[in-house]
Amino acid sequence: MVYRNGTYIAFHAAGSTDPTASDIKYYRMLKAWHEHDDIEFEFINSHDKVAGVRDSSTKATLQRSLIARLNNSKNMVLIIGQTTRFDSDWVPFEIGYAVDTCKIPIIATYVGYDWILAPAQLASLWPPAFASRIANSTVKAIHIPFKQRAIDEAIRQFDFSNPPNGTLVHYTAEAYRSFGIHIA
Image (cartoon, rainbow, N blue to C red; front, side):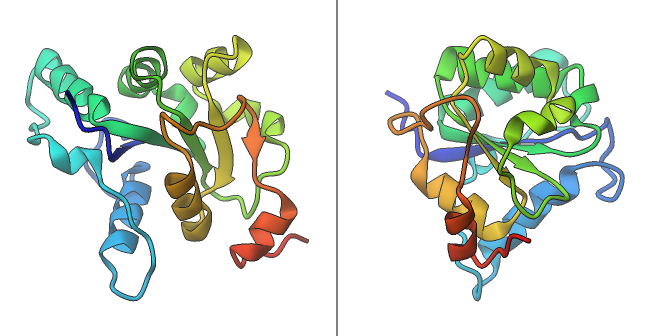
């Protein structure tokens, strides 16, 4: 039996390893928060639990590695930036496998937002694989800003045995204030 304690992080890499040219910078920010001694941010990175693959690996090898990582995961953090919806290979695959096979919730984190109180208003940013699962109510998701305290809380709170109770779940204004995020 697989021990599902990891957090899988999905992001649009835009076919680039340049950390300034894609959303990989946000993945690296999550790792930096985790590694920083003065920041309370804990998670088990599913990407560290399975041997890494090189960019030159075959698509089948990459897919097997992603499946192994997702199978070891309790939840998925989906980093949603301005270009995520254009990803046509790995992000759709990751969302589909996470939701349809692993039945893990998605913590949708939006880059450039201070709070999220009406997730449906951000539908234009959703990758089609995410949008279709929201439309057919097969995904359990919470929608939050890409903010350390909100992400930390969602990772601790939601997993396959305790998912959000819908597709458009979000934290309240009071919750954001408790995270130190002030709503105008």
